[in-house]
Image 1 (cartoon, rainbow, N blue to C red):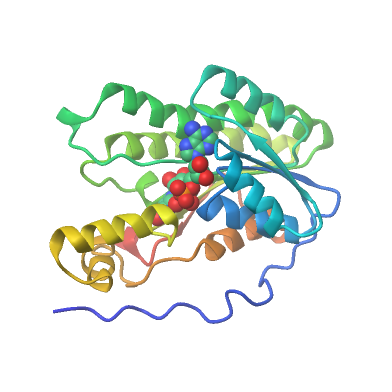
Image 2: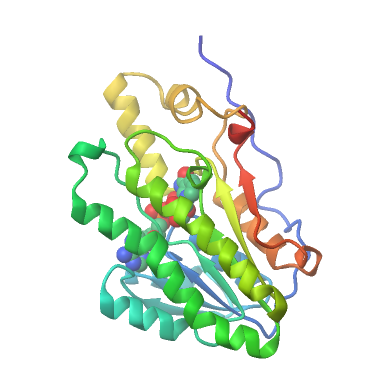
Length: 272
Ligand SMILES: NC(=O)c1ccc[n+]([C@@H]2O[C@H](COP(=O)([O-])OP(=O)(O)OC[C@H]3O[C@@H](n4cnc5c(N)ncnc54)[C@H](O)[C@@H]3O)[C@@H](O)[C@H]2O)c1
């Protein structure tokens, strides 16, 4: 039986629900050229932050700059999987008050067919790069006694799925890194948290949906409800702006006691 898709929340493109004033703050967002990172960069810029937008996609960064009115957005083209890029990223993190570790990628293969080079690349991008960026950001945050680190993990930081060995390993590792950062940062006014979305409507996921619909000969709605969201009680995709709003909340004064936590935006997937 085909399940009805749950309607999304109204007013996502309206005024932001979290009151947030980041005037005078600098935020660094990785993977800012697309999807969730783009939404986070625009959200933090709208709150008044100067945003350092890091991504390997220079064209995407230019488009993001055009979308962010007011010129509060500084593009930083960088590849977070090579040694020089990691060094540059660590330097770029110096002086940031807010760090959003978001850049990520996926490869779906059984372990025995998973190319070791790809495993290494995904771990570098989604675990080593966040470590290097946190390392670069902490001295300034400690000096001023305030900092916010938000790691875009995934429901796959809390649950495993077959064929996603590198992704699940990296996200579980990121959960650990985030908690250690929270313990070390607490006395310096620095919080560190993970956000754990289920499937979000981004270019990456839209392509997966189209591919699966073609492969199985079923509608895209059925792919979403019956394949992607098999473990989610809510049968809809998240929007990138919903993830960005949770990031905004974790940067707000009301969230100053939330640290070392993981915030599932998963339609009750992890309630199982
Ligand atoms: N889309 C989802 O369903 C979903 C769900 C849970 C978690 N996430 C996480 O959210 C984050 C963003 O995902 P998204 O769906 O917005 O993906 P996306 O593909 O739309 O955006 C990812 C961005 O990361 C950048 N990037 C990739 N490799 C890079 C590299 N080597 N150096 C620098 N930048 C690089 C890409 O250029 C792109 O702009 C990822 O960490 C992902 O694991 C996504």
